[in-house]
Image (cartoon, rainbow, N blue to C red; front, side, top):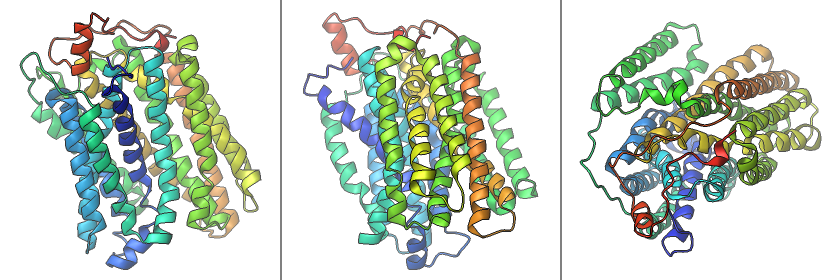
Length: 499
């Protein structure tokens, strides 16, 4: 376990928070810059969205592989290589001269992010003792992710207005360089005491292909429609690949994903992934429609629309703080149910107040605070539930699974709710019609968070079963130090996740 007072321990959490912030930032920072990118590089109208989709495809498709690589080749090594790939791709994107170069850079960025996101959560789980230390780290981890998404919207507008679209890509480079330097000081060196497990190549190929094709099918529904032959064939191919992946995982000795993690023997893990899938479906889509409502209906410019997300940031911080301080007393299950219902109330409030004549005070401020406090309450219990009941050498696997659920949920929710909003809007292009479509999308988002809360109430279980004892496959430097000092190594589930 990490010693926060040691020179090395002081730098670990800043590195991990930087990871979460960057990964979330780059999912949203380019959105407002898209028109300038298209005009400067000569994008065709139907290809500009691939600047966003290329990142989403690579990120969603490679998350499971990235999480497992952290278990197999070492967490620090995976982190360093992920930063290097992410930074190099950001530089290449900022210097791109053609549409193809920019799209390729975004895809490589997504691959780097797929290595970074799971390893950050895994390093928190294995290096912070179960209890207040881990809860605080997970709370800050959740805040960093939420702020990254919100700041991405604000920063995209400011950077594009003041320094041009290339700055949206290049701003990552100095941050990555600083993070790499800190990682050398703060991240424990990889240490292995047994033979290295072998990578499940067949599983890696199938899940990467399946997730990529699935996200591809979802992000193209706005273009082709849900009932088109293209969409049905794409989603059918994705289903076949993922079923084949599940079959392979039951037959290999060192699977990419142990399917028992999603069984009732690991109810908190199963519950956390179902909750993450449903919450992300509603949350990501709601943020998207908030941005559209601010700009299309209320007439905000990019910078003003970004600034309007500040209440979301404040609410996320408040909700995460509440969860950090109370998870030990009330348990993860209670916090997830309460946070999900509070978030649903906020999105339901949006559905009632979003209208053509809405203002920031009447339509945005109150719902933003309620929804974001609820969502902020969920990050700590999600992290503890998804990884606390897992052996240390499989934390990367569990982290990759949780991040995959969140990414898949975001893509699925956005694809479905765009269709729902378009159906409610009809052929109208006036502000009232657009507001009606947005309000309908918010109502469905609220329903998804209610479903997440109910699923957790049923699936999570009142008590978390004991963790699987770790196999002697891999020991981090902090774990080895703790053993030498005679400290107890935490292998049971945190009392704070019980409930």
